[in-house]
Length: 329
Length: 266
Figure 1 (cartoon, helix red, strand yellow):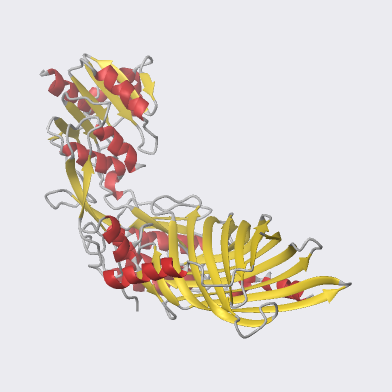
Figure 2 (cartoon, chains in turn orange, purple):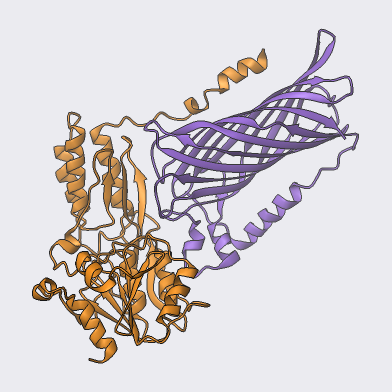
């Protein structure tokens, strides 16, 4: 009986912890504003007065604020950070900031690439779509979220053997898993290279960061290509694409053309609000060896835009420029 | 306030942890093996690095134990493990996986070891990792602690329908030790996020004192034993445990585990 009694008592283990906070609009706002204020890594760099921004929205939110209105206001507040890695997700929407590419030329047309460059007979080496064009291997990679395996890289570099160069096209590649960037870059470097420095938030203060730590690329053990490489980027090359572009910037025989990447140099951390909505925000900083934040962008070596007339004629100006560089035209 | 351990103190505590898990000097009269069937654990956890919401539910729980019962003192060694999804009020899923090695030593040189209250101490070594479904980056958060504190055992033998039963209740409070927890934003402990630290130095830099005010851990474990004719025992065991760990972020944990098992005389 004693065991049973104790069992009944102790089957309420969760009741012995404090109750969940009530998901009132005010509390949801305070949690989001407070956590982002403490752990977002770019408030100082972006010169954001988060306290003032909080005051504006705090006045507008009250206990009668509906979910849709609350979401809209929180999304607007987060939008002031102008960061593609800052999102609020509810069951009915996901906030996003697209300023990092909306104000710039598109510079990419998938239909154009599919019809006139990849063609029907391109090879699909995992996520690496590839085609030989005039003794140059053209590689199209749509998302760093798609896993590159060692076999994919071997297939790629085997096909690149004897080619006059390789074009890697990460235009409109919004990012994904950075490990895929490391893998792909490993094919093109013959030595360990420091491509960036990174630090993490360690506390709520503006200067609460770890020291800067090196980020390096290592040469691949098997799959390697030692010839010239041209990387194509545009403003929609974001996050892992930006990191990858910075990796390639450190490789002497690599050239970046197109438009600067969209940035996204902070790795996002996540949180959950009392009403079940989730959010993410940049919690790290990354700089080049010369101290420039890649959160803003990784610039190209040669600025080239997609000419509308070329496009109308089935010509991708940026790919053609890359071919000209590699073929010495 | 959190204090970082200096190397000598850390090494000292580590030595103490190893030394005190060795068996005490007991009169070795009886050795028992506790073999528990897989049980269930009702757990609730809140990790403020991720969410202010409580995640709770039923997990699978596994345990095994060994004891040496002497005239002057008794030692008990237990290993526990539990895993399984927990959910919050919005049906979001978290997967905590955790285990512990806990030892108890009770002294009863001046009392009957078969009944009554015996006092002693306990060493608890526990870890837990937590994965949140559907998020990336710094997803896994974890902690580990080694601690020591007083423990009590109460035994009440009785018979029912001419059969021998025994009620036994263990209780422990962890007071001092060290812990490691995930850092302010990353999954790894803070010492490992600092580039100047490497290997064991990073581990040492990650250690924090475990003491009341920044960490609480206590447990109570009632069990009912039935002695069979062959001298072995069947037991029904419940263990409640509470944890509160203040690191870069606060985590709190409350769980109750049920096991049915066989205690074998070796």
